[in-house]
Each structure stands twice: as C-alpha cells, then as structure tokens.
Image (tube, rainbow, N blue to C red; front, top):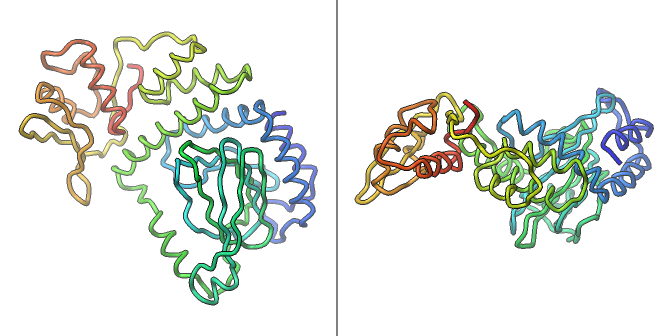
Length: 341
C-alpha cells in the first residue's frame, strides 16, 4: 500500500470539503480509522510517507508540534508524524474536531481528561488512561483533552490524521486558562535567529530517528531514502548509515562549505583557563554552543567571524581530520550547516 492508495480511499469516503462548516459522520471517521489501521501496519506505506516527510524536512523550516507532510486538497485532511523521546509527553492539549492517531513504532500511553469537569473546575480532571502499543489506532470524534506519553526508554513514532477544523474554538467565551498557559509556553519566536539553532539540532534528531526506522525495514525504497538522509543528517547519522552497509553513496569530499543556519546569527569566541568556546548572542545573553581545547583557539575564532567558509580554510596547526572534527562539532551544535561547495 502507498499513501496515494489511502488518500484515494478517504476521497471516496463521505468527508466534507476543506472549506465546509459541518463535521463528518462518526461512521466516516470509523471507516477512515479502519483504513489507517491497515495502512500503518504496512512498512511500504510508512516508507512512502517517510519520503513525503523528507520533502518537508529538506525545506529546513522551523517546526513545532505536528507538521503535515501531506494534506488532501479536497477535504483538507492532514497527515503528520509524531516523534516521542523516551519518557516524554506532549503536555495536555485539546482537540476540537476529529483526529486519528496510530502508533507506528514502540508504544505510547494516553491520559484523557474529563473535558466538561475540567472547564467547570478550571483544572485538569483525569478520566481514562489507555495503553497504545505499536499497531494500535485510536480516534477522537467529540472535543477532547488528552496527554500522550512515551513510557519507555526508546523513541516512539506515531502518525496523525487530522480534520482541517481541529483547533477551532468550540467553547465560545469560556476558556481553560491552564491549557492557554501551556500553549503559550510551547510557542516559538520564529523571528529569533537563535531559534534556527535549536531547530537545526532538532532536525538532526528527527533525521536520525527516520534513519533508524528505515534501517529496520526491508522495503526496497528505504535505501534511496537513506541516501537522502546523508545530506540532511549530522555526522553521527552519516556514520550510522555507513555502518548499515546499505548506502552506496560516495564518501564526503574533502572540500565542503559550512554556512550559518541563519544569516543573522551573531557568534563570538570566549577563552577559559584551558579551553575555548563558541557561543551565540541571544536576547537572554551569550549561550555557549561548542567548547574545545585551547589548541583550537585560532580555529574557533575564525569560525565565529565567518558566515560561510570551506573546511580546508580552518586555520591552526591542525590535521585534516581535526579540521573535520571541528566542522562536525559546529554542525552538531546547529550553528552551521555542512553542504557541498
């Protein structure tokens, strides 16, 4: 099965158009949930979806929360992957229209809250706790407050199929301040250049998790996607892919360019007793990103003063391997991106 097959099936189901005000019938959502259940248990389908996800990641745009990798034009139904670090939760949040959530790898547990009592008491009132192992697919039809969590020491992967009307205000003037406060804490200032550093590091994590997923499949298309990941991932991910023995890409050439992840980043170098550090100037002060031995002082000072440079230009009494080690450390930090010159 491919993503197009699932989309064709959903197009034949009675879902309102993207700009309609009505919600679908419950039976339509149940039918879609059944189709998604079949789809997410098929590695060919998930691999096909990962190709779309890589299309989005290649744009290198900052992201927060669930970012659709595809949206059905007619109905506005969105598809997105969720990545769950070990032991982490999403934080309690509200869905105001139907959603379908499938656990693709590992597991989640989902705490739900009594929405009516929570609004009335102005505090979260627990209701049910659901186990969601890999292959489990659940859905929400009525407005709901919940908090999914990864209870394990391994990453979990989920897929979310959502209504275009999810997020609309259905409570009128009544609000649950706790949810509003949590939403504000998770907000990101995308105009802040330093946000691009955090996003670059986050993208490294996402790419590595995609690679680990692809490494566990025998779908032929996975090898092509692994090759794409070598251009998006960090040095650690490239080494991991090389160790799989499934990637026929050529080794990185000796001449590569490092470029700031955001043109307005302001970098500077600070010296300490026995080491040197590169940091970013932010509205909250200087934030250290990379720390190295004093031997790299000249190299770090040079990197902090450039918006782009070739690895071979890094100065100092360094070997080629040491220059690459510095370049890869800068890439891992999120301050610079390595690309072909």
